[in-house]
Image 1 (cartoon, rainbow, N blue to C red):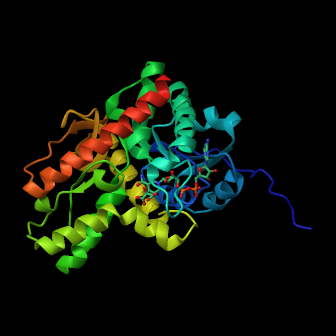
Image 2: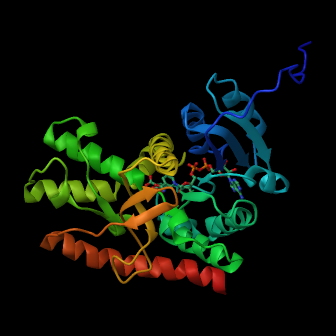
Image 3: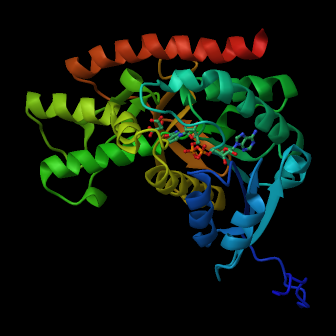
Length: 330
Ligand SMILES: NC(=O)c1ccc[n+]([C@@H]2O[C@H](COP(=O)([O-])OP(=O)(O)OC[C@H]3O[C@@H](n4cnc5c(N)ncnc54)[C@H](O)[C@@H]3O)[C@@H](O)[C@H]2O)c1
Ligand SMILES: O=C(O)C[C@H](O)C(=O)O
């Protein structure tokens, strides 16, 4: 018979410098590869993995990677407070994913309550943590989180960031394919929100500067807006983007940590409280700093096609934002 795992007779290790990061929903399709990627991040000294199922196994597995971060697992609501206490960065991919035929908004009824309870935990146990919110529908879950923090008296708009990095990753990939260059050399700002027409790639502002034919603009805009659905349909009922999302979340989390360390010039697109439009939340480039989204950058010059897209995006976004706010005030 195999011997059980006994506590190691180890000598005390001095706390490694670095940040304490929690992943909520760590046993899920995104959560598992995201936990692996955060365990690889040298800026992370402590990694807390929380879920309502399967965290003991995921934690045992990830903790055997010989990288610096100390990994601890937490299972179920009774352990949420322990998972969150002392955290600097909380990444939230908890909640249901889409199946073919569903919109992200169809997830609202299940995921709104999950995000509310997790954010109540953040407000109580680590009110100064920076929150990276992934759970869909992001256009509504970020306003829900803001309302939770307002009710708790802990709201700092700079610290609440909706993760739209996957839209940028897709835009960079598809644009690079059309231009025949390496995606790592491409940067496409994607603004608005994270669903359908609210995902607005600014192809007039692509770096390196380039121009597209009307056909290319139409193809690229549709493909970027439809990227999530492309994966949902390809997975045919087995969920939505997990691996590319874990990659994108790890990239965004790393940008937040570098900025928290004091690195200058860290700029990423994110869905945040914003005065760039008349809407209370909007995704644009933001400059990240020690306190989170320290500066929300303007849209920059838009062409006629993008201006028309912006109007469509704002109409849908307004409804999604209001739905989130209403959920918290009913
Ligand atoms: N922002 C984005 O760009 C983006 C991209 C992809 C997916 N998503 C969203 O991310 C979410 C997760 O997707 P997934 O594919 O990992 O789903 P999944 O079902 O594989 O995993 C979700 C995990 O959340 C856990 N969970 C459920 N309720 C919880 C709670 N109260 N507390 C903690 N954990 C809880 C589940 O147990 C599960 O392990 C979905 O809402 C999906 O739509 C967002
Ligand atoms: O499309 C989804 O439902 C998941 C996610 O929002 C994505 O863009 O891949």
